[in-house]
Length: 275
View 1 (cartoon, helix red, strand yellow):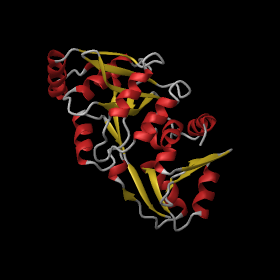
View 2 (spheres, rainbow, N blue to C red):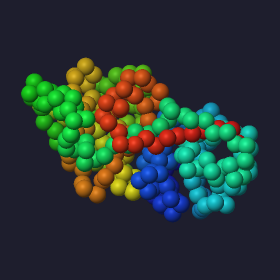
View 3 (cartoon, rainbow, N blue to C red):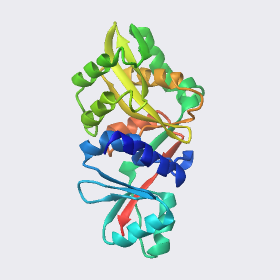
View 4 (cartoon, one colour):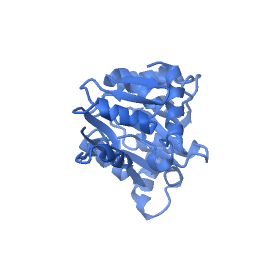
């Protein structure tokens, strides 16, 4: 997949209803596919009226495109396993295959947050989050700055020192995002502890007022650092961003607990099944 494919993919997503807030799947957006294609072994095929994605295990993302494109795909892929299927896609398949049995794929559900809630942290449900953030700021000499070409080297240094935990093996994708920071139109922040780069996060809009947080890395063992870095970004995002998609938890119990603690406003539920 090349950079120019991103615009083609996102134009198809917009044309065929994949960018409205309630149906904006991060897994299908050009940004995520470009960043993770190599690392996850994805093969992306783009046509005039749609696109499809296959992974290294021979599974297919539910295609995006015209009704004829999707119907032809289903006809030509009977017996193959689908993944990354939204609830709204199930009816389309059942119209062609009445006995299709979808399976909920909880590990691939995407967490979606309100930007205004995450920026303000107002209300009782964020009481513990506010307390954790306040304590971190009191106990540390910390500041954040926009991620730009001038401090991109600091983000690389953080990534180089980062050690993945279970479910977080995406260093290759994170590096690809930094390598193409300007071309992808990413925006983000870098956090400094005692003047030393300690964490960063970045992403971009993927349509429908949704911002995809595609990479977040920080020094391990510093409690509150991840919260501070992301909060700094959410405060800085423009008002046109209404929702933040942080992708899935990959089935990691620790990541799942962390993402739920941040109080998502909805989940993009994912399904799969054999055609």
